[in-house]
Length: 229
Image (cartoon, rainbow, N blue to C red; front, side, top):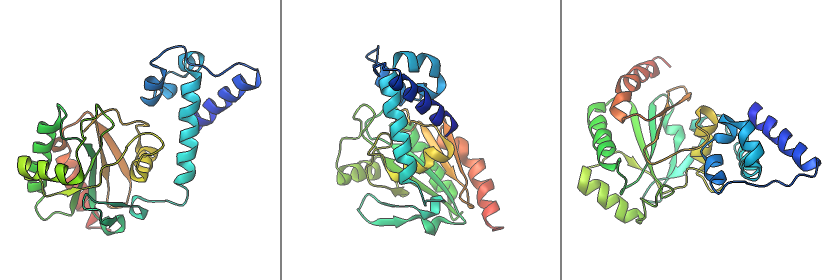
């Protein structure tokens, strides 16, 4: 939040001095959405002030929306069948969350890895929640029924498929707003790009650029810690 306050101060100063908030490059919205306002603030505030302003305001709006939500277990969301899933049921367990797509170059490897992981979980208190998302290359265009048919027929998916959501922007799922606020990144960059691991006590870690099976040891270690709660 400190970086956000600094950005807002700089943007307010620019506005106070009468300098119009403008973007000097066509790629500014994309850069801002990918987190460059945080990673490279000097350049971005000079060249992409308009986009950084929009990102900063959205972050403030997200923070207000998250007020009163103290834990992952306070959340709820719809599954792919439209049924409300209350996350309080996952307290004391481990949960793995990822955004997925059916027509991505990473679809096959990640779904196969997720299915293998799910089979190895067996009766351990570990949950997998996959959120379909169409924000990256429009690679999840199907309806809920089409998505479910694809993952079940192609991969035999049995873990929890959630309702299709946005993971970035003003219409992002409250689940993703919460997870990103707790562990980053500020922006999900692609399908299957970031896996969130929620521990039995509700603490959140994010892992970007990994295959799900790489997280197996961590998931089982955390599951054992949940037995002690």
